[in-house]
Image 1: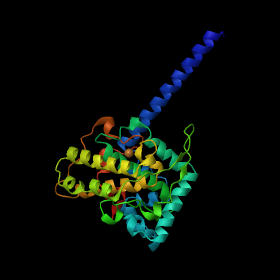
Image 2: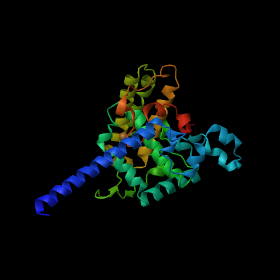
Image 3: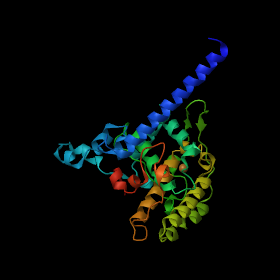
Image 4: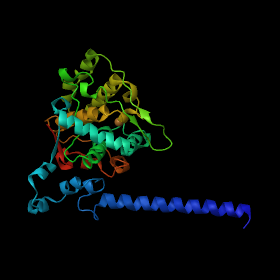
Length: 300
Ligand SMILES: [Cu+2]
């Protein structure tokens, strides 16, 4: 074979590989969306822990299954206000986060947020996409400490309008997938008055009756809090490296759930269809993100 022929066959092989990959992706997507192969397509595609396996088993099976009392916490689990956590709860959360940072799982999640192709900011995907994104970290956390959940940082409360004290020393260096260099978390928080001003928008936002109005205003306040924390939190590719990102987003998710549960917000959903309704790179579709109790958690 001469050189040009060799090159041609190489290009051909690459093309075939790409086609095969595309075909595989298409069937995978089909399997995930038609749900025929999975009894519980919502959870099954993203399960990383045995706790999730129990949690997502059919209600009838769960009733028949005899579980020891210490496994009863599995459904639904509670996301708590960070200010209400005990010392042990704080330690176990940080311990799980650290383990995930060291084993590379955390860095992989951060890199997903750096990928703008997921269109998760400035679109109607913002709220459902981040709801799914939080679940990814939470499921990874629970594969280490099954009783730990993501606490929310309720910056609408006067007592929480600053970086929580127990997080002030938590500025890890996060190893990232190759070739991205590690991220060392930094913060440049603003004043208490500034975060209070941002939070003062929330009561009026809760009164809105249209999803697009609600989402766009809430995302605006959310952006303000990102900028208020500053440093790593101020830029999209590095923000999730700061553990406070997840607690900020849990608070946004909680505010959305409160609105969804209110007369103004009831039944008001994003207007997404086709691939825009699939929360890529995750398999969840937008309708599957609407009910947090179906996803297995509540806010307390
Ligand atoms: Cu984001």
